[in-house]
Image (cartoon, rainbow, N blue to C red; front, side, top):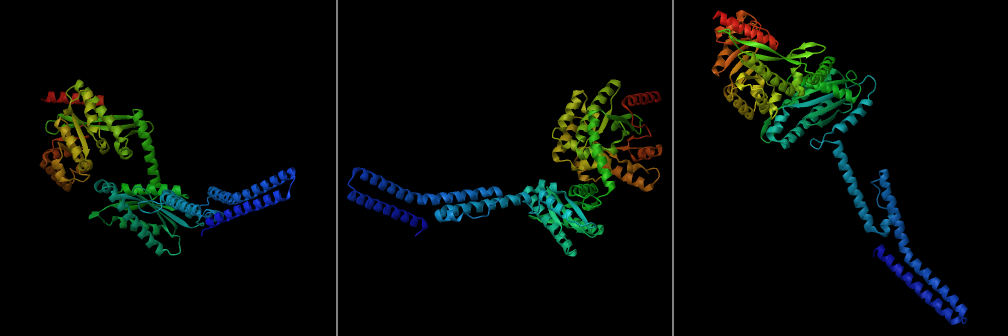
Length: 561
């Protein structure tokens, strides 16, 4: 028999006893009292007694429920103070046990949901490592706990070639690879912790994407972190076996030491990040320590990025034109448009001083549009000034990645009524090897429309001979480094001769640039090179000077003829 049933039976008995007592009282009163007034008074007393007994009988369970509900409301209000663990009140369990059990189950589910939300908020769901927020909070505590004289280290790990895994195998496989990377990082950190027993354990975290970070709260020396950086790079460079695929990636690793590189987690992470990007620019698969030289280079890069945006808006860019000359006839066959930056404070800056930054920050796409627009205007002017020849200009890989690039190029030259037969697009050797099938088809369509296609700086990147044969190609420009000692070194001549034979074998013409002496030009002519550009004929010139030079060259040619 439950307490609730016993309560009901008790209430029935009490109510029955109240009725019997009221009956006896009323009967005795009417039997002994004869006066009307006394009978009325006795009736009122008897009725009041009955009402009192009935109220007590009915109110008894209600007061217990009310007290239980009051206790439950107090328990629920305790949630405001963060109390999710206390059970339902005993009074509620006595009066309404089913409701008490339901309250306990509700709070158990709430606690589980809070724990899950806490885990999601503090840990990365893919690798189960601490996330950025958790890492910063815990690393900050570790750093503040250091005593004077103790050193700490921040390690920033960024995977190399991870994007290609996502692109080729999908994001699900990419997540599996991230989990495997996290496990290797744990192994290296665990091994290091065993070698430095007694010190606080390093903290490993995944910040975002393919970026990981490790905080070493106590280190013995920079040599220790040199060892750690080397181990981490080797661990990630080992192939990963993923669903039947052997995946080769690497890691660029940056290391910052506290307190000399920063005395806060923010400063150390920034320093380690700068060092990591230096390692990546060096080819990846290595580690690098932060230094003041790296900080200066980073600061210069940031300032250059800002200045490049201002330069576009303020028309600080100009184009210089350098003639390309036929070695046999001496005639001008075309020109190359070379970008110059007229910096208001530093004077003229050559592309080598800012192009890498422009590529990395993406502003090169806007600069490329400006170059194409200016080239279209120059060709239109050249047609007015005289017989226009082919004008070459560089195309950035960032421009190729824009889906509207080819349409924009066509529209820019159509707007100036310049035929594509006067346009030569130059791609660096490395960029030419990376173009996609769709891009190759678009380049072939431009070539079919009359444009010339050239590979620039050949001999500095990497080449796939099959790609050279399959890519729509008209001309190949030898990198200046190949010809610099052409008239002084037999080995240099042998190398150039071999390259010339290779280019002729794929059916392309050759352009040698940065030729400075007649001796170099004569050797190239003997090797079968037809076109050169360089100071041996003319330096890069402003447009008006260029047109005058071309006119003078043509006049000299007519006179000699």
